[in-house]
Image (cartoon, rainbow, N blue to C red):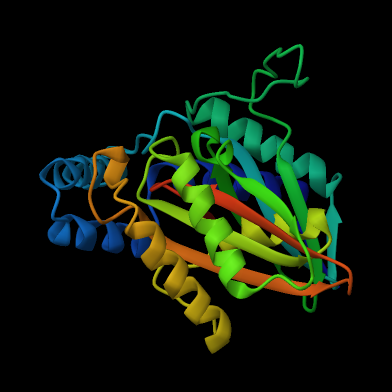
Length: 280
């Protein structure tokens, strides 16, 4: 059994909140630069130039890549041989989010009640997803989620007889309806199967997969390729200015499901789909 303190967890989460909001994942940065070099739309290429210059400046100056520093979504893989000392794990995570957002001067965007809309003042509570794994370590991933893209997400309960082509059409339709709202080039995480809440969680995890990494199953890798091609043929382009670079990636993940259903959730990510990880 290995002890991990409340303070260590809180400090790690605080650091990840700031890092995720100021330093873009290298895979996304490289893909954005490549899109800038190959974009045929003059206006679209101009938008991509601004996007690239922005994320490079943010990393250099230590300022947020985007003014919407998001709601903190935290994925935690906790080794079964870990003992957490000094308080509840969830409270340590929320203390870390509070420090990261308040002390890090990040925008506070969380309200206590979805209808009465009073700001919590420290960007807590986080959305926390826990899983138990082997070992004596804790892996933390902080994925701040802005709502320009989150609001463009969609779900559909397909019939079990639905085809992969129908799924691809739904993914493409979701991107078309979103238009410029999710600040394209977008990243689409797709969750298939499970129950509705599981499909949503799978989709959320899917947008964190590197944009240059395809599904290991050739069946789903081909679906991702076809969906991406269809979305990029829509002509929405970077920031909605037109062009061929509307999406960077379509990442599909799946889970076993019931014989009578086929849940599908598309979670939309913007060109700054942020996340940072650490192992304690």
